Image (cartoon, rainbow, N blue to C red):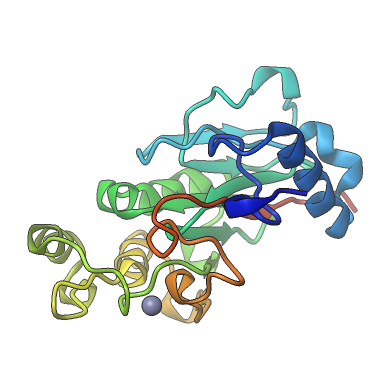
Length: 229
Ligand SMILES: [Zn+2]
């Protein structure tokens, strides 16, 4: 429903798009996933590029959580609660425990460097009582090392935190290498990590890209929901 730079399926309310369009877009998205019945329970935290992990449980009441709740990761062990975070270049990460509990994580460079992905893995392990060695991790489309030039000191900070694989050369940063290293240091096994190949900055017809669209664009979403039988 959105137009201009937000065309066509912008899912975020914080980007100056018409809020009525965003509400309709979210509804279309949920309907496409056969989750329309749960639209009133949709959880979309206010993302702040921080390391706050929010927990949503089975006794979740929509009135408890508003868009004002600030978090960049949501761990959910409840049923029929769609959880969505929004992206334009930052990395969406999904983690699923054998119990069905899951985490949706927004990892840009600030959050990744602050360790939000490993923190969410720890929280999911606590909430689900499952060992992280059984977790499945999916790293969604984000800006690839091909297009992600950053200051050298930021590369250095990532290499210090997560090892040399973060340095893609010529001042280019690999967010996915950092995320892989982080989850593995928290007990996830490498064979259970899957990753999308797309670079958002090179696929603006398919995804929104903050860099490639000079900061004026919508946000795509990463959504998970655990369905009761
Ligand atoms: Zn690229």
